[in-house]
Length: 311
Image (cartoon, rainbow, N blue to C red):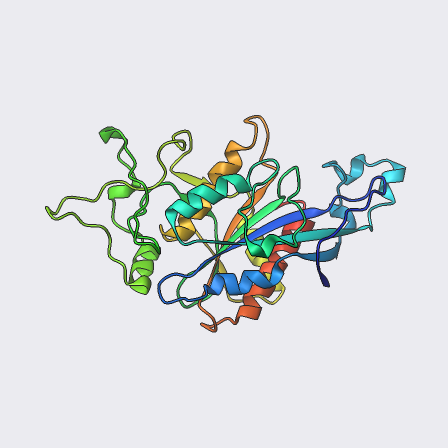
């Protein structure tokens, strides 16, 4: 699985197996992290190309089943596929997520201007095949998240700002006024943050995704078969990983829901999203996994998602 640095020029050979385009995001500094552990693991993958051989029984061309390929197309079964990876550092702020993530799902994608992108090839006109978000959690195994949440963001971000207040009808109720989940409690303890509390003792306002996100449900699940991916990673040597249904109701959960929602928004209602969206929680460096081990787990995840027909 050699990785090649530098921008890649697409071949114009007829019927060539299409390249796979991936965007991996990590978070910027916050709290005690001058450099976010998620960014340490993501950054080495910037502007790289991974070459993989597609398994014969999984190879498709122009989204067709292998059984539907004609004789000429069938000769391409063993053609390698190039996976182009771009990385992006996202600020640990609600405003930053809301201003950046919608552009990532545009056609073509819109990336914020940074010095790191001066040598990067232009984003794929048809959008990314995979957007993988990575963020830091507490000490422990990797956590592959299955669902993003719309409400319940009561902790301040790296700039000391809260998530937007959501105006809803009283009868709609919702997650914002319920007890914090276990993952959210762990985030509060880890970061030393308190849940917003009003002086008169009343419950804090509902915060999360409001205007523009009304059509979307309170929970959005990824289309990726997370259990199969986790099983594959365990078999390939990434033993310290498990799937999760609670991304913590902080910026990690916030970017995940935003990305899942924007992916749906950019896809016609009659179609299945062509971009896979996924979130991975990593621990702080060497607690217990090293940065290199997290980077390798990210690469293995990307390769599986690229080469698996059922994901």
